[in-house]
Image (cartoon, rainbow, N blue to C red; front, side, top):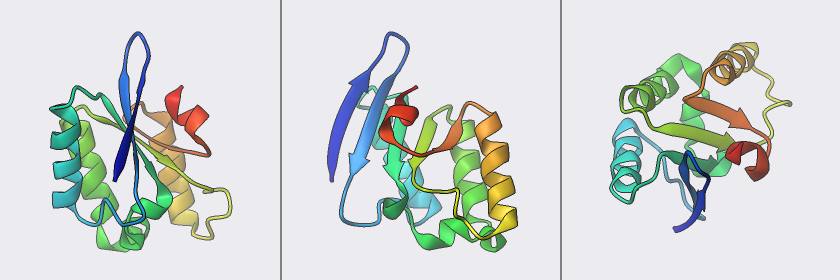
Length: 115
């Protein structure tokens, strides 16, 4: 895994890149938050490919648990991917609701993630 830092006047973001799954459980999400927090980061940016596919199956509750942890610990999360073609109406609604807030957003590219 490589971490590319990006800083603005208000936030320090960590863009995590790997050829493996980085967030496959609530415990892994918490560990990412802790690791990034202690390095001074306020936001984690992940590619969709680095998140286990079960996260995107809302029936199992994984996404809700993980996103609640990000909200509780006040760590922002940006997930980069093509979500426009997502066939699940419930996932589309979940993404739209998340994007109304400030904590977790589903974005199309790194530029949007850094805004």
